[in-house]
Amino acid sequence: MNTKDRSIITDRKLAPEGHLKIEWVNAHMPVLNRIKAQFEKEQPFKGLKVAISLHLEAKTAYLAKVVQAGGAEVTITGSNPLSTQDDVCAALVEDGITVFAKYNPDPKEYKELMIKTLETEPDLIIDDGGDLVTILHSERRDLLKNVRGGAEETTTGILRLKSLEKEGSLQFPMVAVNDAYCKYLFDNRYGTGQSVWDGINRTTNLVVAGKTVVVVGYGWCGKGVAMRAKGLGANVIVTEIDAIRAVEAYMDGFAVMPMSEAAQHGDFFVTVTGNRDVIRGENYKVMKNGAILSNAGHFDVEVNKPELEAMSKAKRTVRRNIEEYQLEDGRSIYVLAEGRLVNLAAGDGHPAEIMDMTFALQAMSLKYVNDNYKSIGSHVVNVPYVLDEQVARYKLESLGTSIDRLTDEQKAYLDSWAEH
Image (cartoon, rainbow, N blue to C red; front, side, top):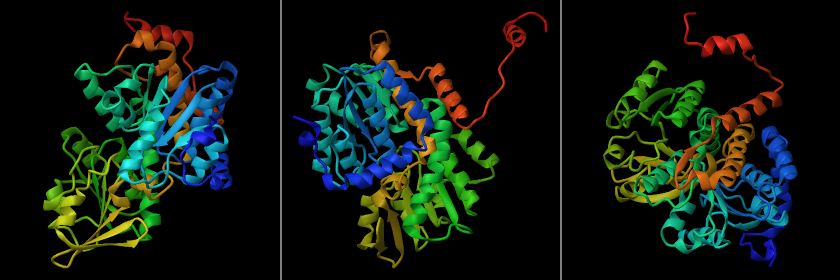
């Protein structure tokens, strides 16, 4: 059975539009292009099956094609029901990749599509948020037998993996791509910072300058969101549970306070914690009329929607990706993209040049785990620094930029313990 017959997508006729999107990002991902050329020559995944669960849009599609170029039989599904782009899915099917994904399937179908991806019995996986790993370690342990290992994209997924590892349940090695320097320094900070405000701005069509933005969490994603909000002219408040990050936010020039206080001031709220219920019932009680809530963490649990709905007398969609909750006291609170990732569910995700580095890390990490899975064992491991630095060097070369190198005398000086 060929990939077109196996695949489950919305409409194969959309392929031409999807190809144009993929061609556009291809032209802006020089690092991944370089790795694709290497993979075509070396064929590191020849004869292997690779299952991918990521936000299924053009940049992800190109990563899938790079892995395919390395000899793999690739199957891909979406990691969020609202971020899948149907035209991109159709284009991938035409290119010989099996796709089990649709935009906005119901929860049951969404899960079924993910399981179908795993039923191809992959040797390697690329995961986003740990969903593939969770299914493999719970309801479909029968599909574990071929899995050599894989790579994880997100903070949330790594937390889940480390929990599995801690209890001794993890069955194969996973590379923590999110923890690589070329991921969190650029993807999490600059990618999230830009794409979040792209999603919010195109969805609301409201000015940010002069408004108060509450950024919930000051990790690398939070830093990026706050930095870009400041650049747009907003007054920025940061809420945190980590004292060190709170001091950092303060010294970066932002107001720092608990959510109980910040909730009274915010016009826009952006959650970036990876945790649940960071905005909840007690906060809704004191929010301004017209407050706009959005999430840029992973799952749609950071903004507690059930509590908001329970406090509301009515709910309606007032604009695409904007739900209005009308409270009993007459105030309205708005939630963007159903509380899912606003930068992907209501936008196109990170810029192509940013994802070029992240997906280069994914491709190289997949090769690394395939080459070393027997010696790594069932552990969560970091991306080797040599791969991290190689991606950075490829990026610099693509920009026409060079940097200094140590002389032999400088290396000897730094390595010496003797008196300098």
